[in-house]
Length: 308
Image 1 (cartoon, rainbow, N blue to C red):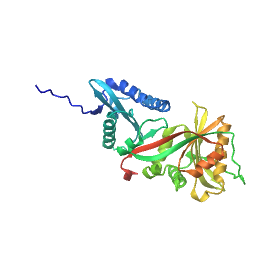
Image 2: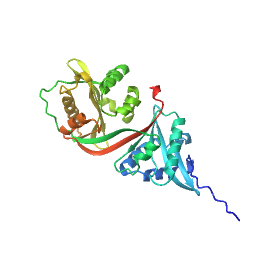
Image 3: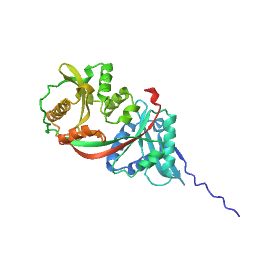
Image 4: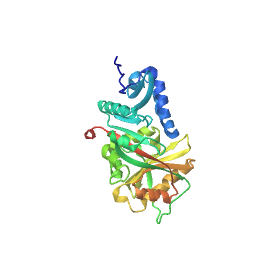
């Protein structure tokens, strides 16, 4: 008598509501402690979410047991973040294919994923599934009491960023980003408006520490700072000058001003992220005593870039 063999094909399906807790535990186990904390933060707003809001959570099951999970976390403005499964076993390809197809059907503009140094997930797997390498970000930390030597201290003035009109804000960010070495691939994908929305999303309270930088009666750059009460540190989100004002020592003066503001507010340390290829910026921060404490690799699936 011939025996019928049960198919061993693994399929990914939207996570049933009753298996959601198991799926999220699987996701948490797949990441290092730093990313587990980030996942926990991402899940907080989902506490009262409807079942429809969980459509981006996909799982594989075998013999009634949940064997893998992947989550596409929806973000504002058709963005998303991907939370990866464990980088082991044949189910990874199945889950990534399901997530990628879902992202395309949802018309998501950009779905990114972050790999920390501790991540065991292979970059090759992500590239094989159509992701693009966007940037390698180095996270630096420095003391707020450090100052750079400047030959002729520049008298920089700060104006609240929100005093500019939306058009002026976008024009300033576009000028500051011109020829920037930071995250060029990301800037090619996203419009200036989308980049600004991303800054707002990081911390809705942060704009009270955002400034347009003035020098000799004209606006020459931008300084975006964000205090983080949980750590007592301040973050330098963005510091930049218009191209025609670079190379005149204003960058050194602007960094000194950022450190002074953080120190005056009681923050002992300042953090920032810089693209690994941005050697001039890295040298400037290193001269101010900043040191690398971690590094992240950024990958993404791109949507329709023509909609910018």
